[in-house]
Image (cartoon, rainbow, N blue to C red; front, side, top):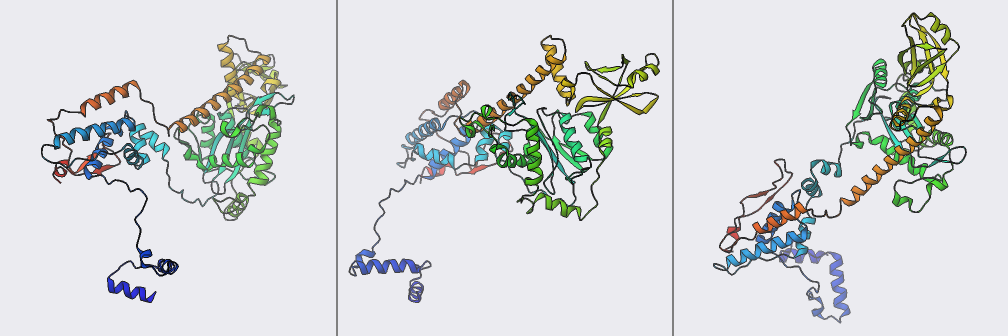
Length: 542
């Protein structure tokens, strides 16, 4: 190797052969009986691509800019035809003063040029700014949190699991709402039922987070809560609770699930770790499900699923290593508690009082009634006796559970008396949101309200909501799969292509003029890229 370096210096070779190359040359020389011809490099037998002139590349880029990078654009085959026709006309015009013709590119060359374009650039011009930003997502790392419960995320999720009732009848898929504490990734509250996303569902999970826990479950009053900007959170009751407790509610913009990336990631962990291994799972999409019959294999009730989910959260998820925090959520929670005061938590009675809404109603026959359902209790008759003419009683109700209300005389508002549902089969664990859906559907069908009809209508509403959610999920999946395929030309696009073709085939007497310096995209002033080109008139005489 020392001799090789000395020879390289004497010959001025800046890239001398390495040890392996010298060894291989010597081996070949020795195996050929020291024939020096074996060291002569043989010409390559592989095909070498034809080198196109600069003018060809300029024309290709110009046509891509003016024709292909538009919302209505031709396909690549038509674009190649336009380029070919353009160069043929130019070559005919050049015959009068030069014999140097411009090379005509192949269809594969045009394909490769477009393939090398930036994906964001193509989506920006073909589908618009919003689609391009949504397809090519990016984000910066979130600043580390140093205070427990400084930030909490909440979101709803349609569980990938079919459930049954006590008699084995299929009930469909339940909805899950969770609250996740971002510093430790602990789940501090959840609500799992057939109730669709609504303010009552959020309120149930919020109660779990606030109430004092005997078993040491993580929870407490948060400083900021990030939620969807949907109907389930746009509720005055929940906003009033936030104002009373002194925490901030932040609503994420519509169509931006990445705002709550941590809770979305939790749903993925839940599916892969628990839900997709339970008989009756629907998996994440029809492709994963295949021919698996989810309804036939369903075996769990909603009560059993709640029990299994609670066990999984407390004993599996909270105790497992989390790569985002480099420890388990339980260890992170314990370490954070050691560095600060315990979070604020409240008794069950205080939380119930905090979450109640108020209305004014008259009492009759020992009952209080509103929204076409009623409650009764032993103290209601006496309260009604002490009410003056046209005076109404105070009625406190919970929008997440209409099984019970609390009634008080307006002169003694602190004396609350409990009243119970007159139709417990329908009202128990019924949210106000579900009841309003039932009333709306019965009104459309011109059916009078009664307990039996309401129960059947409530079941139908749950199934319809699940079907709507599944259809939206399928539509979203279909759009993603179609985005990679060529978009079919509409009649307007075909007419645009024909008009463009006519404009690009001028008479022989015309000369082409390509703009100097740059070819800029013509979509708008905020275009993300340009091409640097040269003047074709300077290339003609090369």
